Image 1: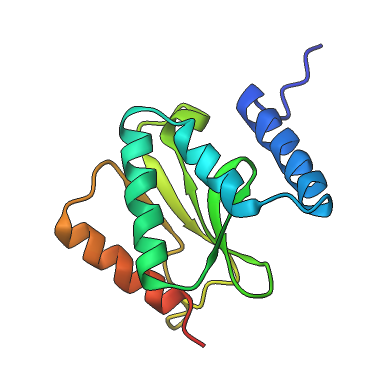
Image 2 (image 1 turned 30 degrees about the horizontal axis):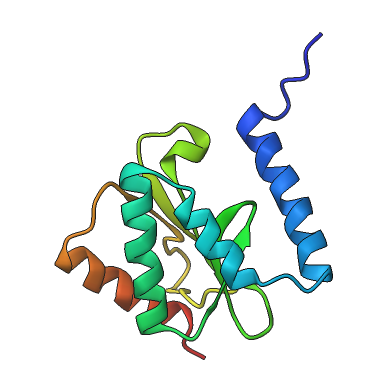
Length: 138
């Protein structure tokens, strides 16, 4: 019986996480790995990832890295705050921004931590910039 616990894409992401941990322990350049992950993308995913990377750079002091093979951004403690998940990675129709527990987006008892992206206009970029600034406020 075939193991269907994880998809091929999920297994690849797990392998990427293991490789990232080993690279981190060896002192690899995490920001360069993020740049490489973005450069390897194509089409809309690449355009969105580049735009998001610029928004993170312009609006936060988060450090670029990879997380499960995806571009991600960490706080000073090395905790992932947000990751960009290209739609093509898991064969879905849109990319997503996924905020992790280190993000300070708490708003009452319920708040969003994920956002679907299909394109980014100026208003979208400003909204994401606001969310990023909120995610890193202390």
